[in-house]
Length: 266
Image (cartoon, rainbow, N blue to C red):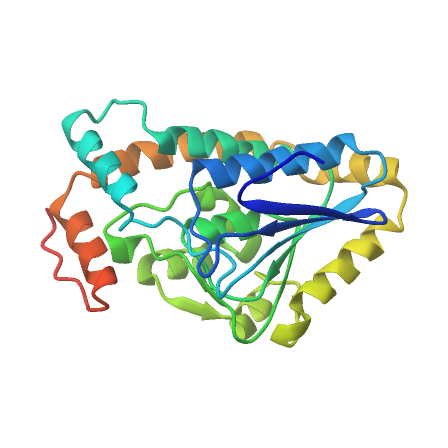
């Protein structure tokens, strides 16, 4: 196995395990997404691995991007002065599409919050195992922003257009029980059992023919990576435009200060 700085990678018989190790909230950036994509590709090359699990340490599964991070704030300033600049977020979406191109099934173990791009990461998996304490949120509009990570195509395909619109337009937090009812999660178990249940599901998948799995999955997910690529190209344009607005700055401040934003439409 390769050496990774932000994830742990293990093999358990025919099941691979990727663990995000940026507790407590597991904020992502291009480096983390790149490592997850690398690990999935490594599993694709390993004939012994037939399915895998994506889990996380800490309180959250993945709380998305940290807009209060100084490095990201510097990125925003660069975006204001040069909207056409080649920012890291461009590359983040390139790595995100790599995740959708992996060949073998993987299960996301959602034991805590999956927010924003973290929701996009959760939805990239074939299946999700979660618990009542988990929260799923597409909180982009509450930030004065536009959805990303391909969610404008993946979320409607998973839970239906109207439910996706409800999540996008309200930015509300969906509970684990609601996620299970909507089909956003495939299994609902006690929080302490989320990872073991995800490993069990991956193990059940791994009992099947590896060639049959890869072939069937390629059929079922045909064109998905291309749809995600098209979606992220559009999402990025909208995000770069909205990043320069006063509303976006107010949304980030209000979220950090845990208050209702005072948006002005400019």
